[in-house]
Length: 89
Ligand SMILES: [Zn+2]
Image (cartoon, rainbow, N blue to C red):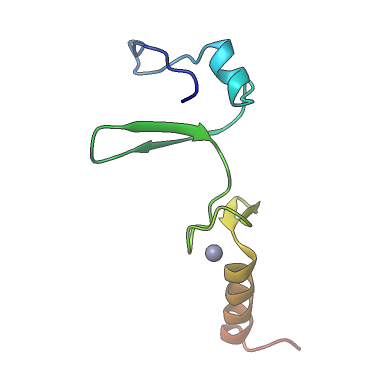
């Protein structure tokens, strides 16, 4: 188990993360985080990593033109776009 802190939400439901928690997971001011609400009431905050919006892959996904996509889905997407647009000249 890493670092556990008790925090209260601000009046606008915000949360400030302590310096030691941020240092523990190498989070810096301005970094993006993923916030996930789970059925059991758990709210998970993790350092943002690109997640393919099509298959959910987190290992190879990258952000391109504002979309997180993995190489496999990008290849499939590219092929389908070319096919539907009438092929490459
Ligand atoms: Zn994918």
